[in-house]
Length: 121
Image (cartoon, rainbow, N blue to C red; front, side, top):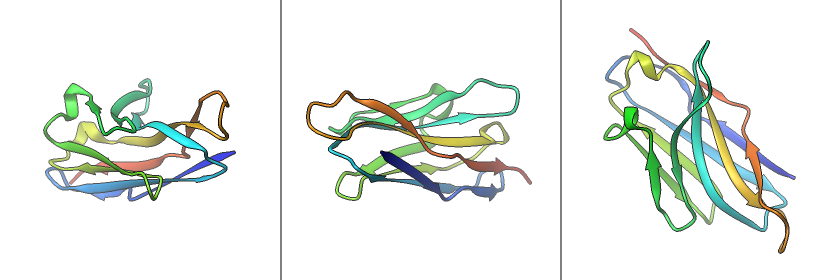
């Protein structure tokens, strides 16, 4: 089984910054894409950013130029640097990873428990 543990959420003023981290642990053979999603009250969960095992990244239009996703494959950790935060960024942020637990296994999707990010004065 794969566990994803997020950290780094909290309160920041508009224009401020926060950095989220998500570490994967457990029985892991390989991790493909890792990413961050968010869900605000009354809204559907949406992709914020993702990064493949080869470093290719994808961003939601709303965060391009403000957020940066990186990963450390040796530590099985993905990061999300959030700059120039806006009130609209307020949401619960979830870490996501596609992983195989042994060679030949099907890739499965795993989720973290979520961390609250609030951008407010």
